[in-house]
Image 1: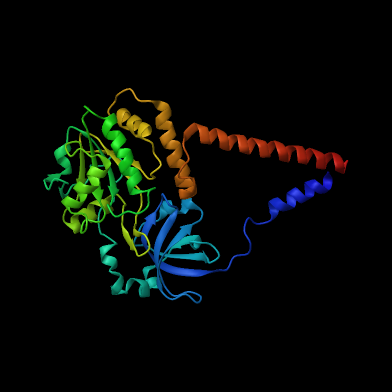
Image 2: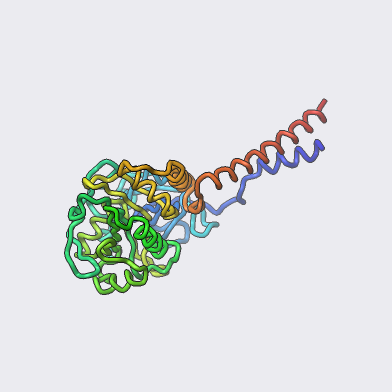
Length: 339
């Protein structure tokens, strides 16, 4: 029994992963994707890798909170993982990544936008949009209604991202029927997503234009609007656009009430959040579920993006309790063997 205890203790002391092939990296942040636990970096040459751009996982995911796109960074990169993983990430002086920033072919100016980044409690920014019917509008046209805002693009190939958000919007459309709530999805691909393209996309998901607007417009203004909410689209040849997830609740006065940084929210949770902000009776458990799932993604990254409220929380606590009990029993056996 004592031998078994020492073996278990030794297993705990062994690192979770084998010795990694690690080296230092300098680069420029092109996008921060908190819902994925990832960043997009334009990096200088390192090891045998030529300068380029790539998506990296960040560990711990909590390090993403302090990062903003356009910042110069230094980190240790683990080449044994897919995608590569950055550890010990820190911001550095811009001079260290001059070669990255000086590459005109990357058109970084189109990605790194000089806009004010909004937060909860501020007035939502505004811009001229065109909806799927070809009608111009401003966000302020919806004053007097609560607005639920999200960002999508019609060529998205990942069923877990834009199509999933739009499917949830269909459920919200039904849940908010007859209420002063307007749904708004803004494209991140305004050059391609014309009103006719958005109309076709909207018909696929059952969007009723009077209650659910799909917005496009001048590409610079549309992408500036998205960037103000920290949503930046980065072109990727493999999957189209890499972008962060953010769902926003704007109250009847135009004030930002909720910024939800992951896509695993349920329609019930969103309805509860909107009802609470409208000072209506709201399900407190659904609001807590939304907070729990958001907190889990913020701490652990997209690997727990499916985390949902009490059920998963109780499951995690049960697993922790089981292993705590197991180690307690092993510890007692070791103690008895030593006496």
